[in-house]
Length: 379
Image 1 (spheres, helix red, strand yellow):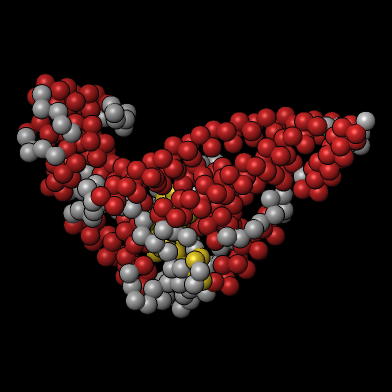
Image 2 (tube, helix red, strand yellow; image 1 turned 60 degrees about the vertical axis):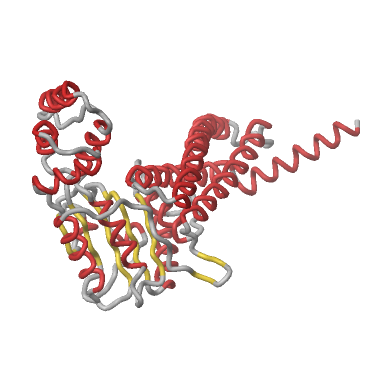
């Protein structure tokens, strides 16, 4: 009878825990952490692709980041499976809402969700350490650390960065939008802007880099911003109340910059998210990247910097650097067919790196020409 009594007490405790904490709340926390992890994996993978350094210490950190990304993918897969299974359990809860005791399955699921949330939090901290992006240390708040990014190349990129730096230093400008087509280098330039701002003597006290979630919604963006600024939001709370708490947290920081990467073309305002609208003369700034042509409300009153495509000369230079070759008529033709879009150039040049066979180069040009109208790459 004793083992049964122990089991009964344990189950009663888990029952109380489920009722106090709530599986649905735990699932929402898990969903937010999963989206944040997914966005951060994308950022780090992009940075690792852009990095081209042979320094031993940096290679060691890149190896550690690759391990982190691999673990992150496994955790994301586990979390999404648990979220799918948890949805079925929550459906069971609705069916048995008035029956009193909660099933052992729900108790076990809550434990799994709680453990995975803790694991994801630890994984986030590990990335903070590797990137040096922790907001706090033993001495208090930190301005932030450099984000890995490739070297600036060409006049277009230099002019764009200089224009962005001027706007960021202007007290009369609170919101800046970096606008351009996909692959044109918006995120690349914003990373350089972020890194250069960290080096200013009279810099901003906080620098927050946030990638918009794939499933764009007010709640998901709020979760991403809250995770970056270490603000605990009620997962099942009203969106307006969540926005108010987030706004109060940011307002209390004083001098800060939020770099929000990947805003889609949606009807959304800063107030709905909870980001204070920077006023003229304030020490808070918002910098975003978007493909939108200023349709969204979030772009109202933004100073927009449109990123142009590379010139033929700059495109050839970038292609040559990435492919590590001497330019030929075929390779020059490939570079021109990318229409000055850096990501296309890098993708093709990286694929062709180390290939000496002229036939393969001609074949690549043929494939790219056939796919040009569909705006797709063969690699």
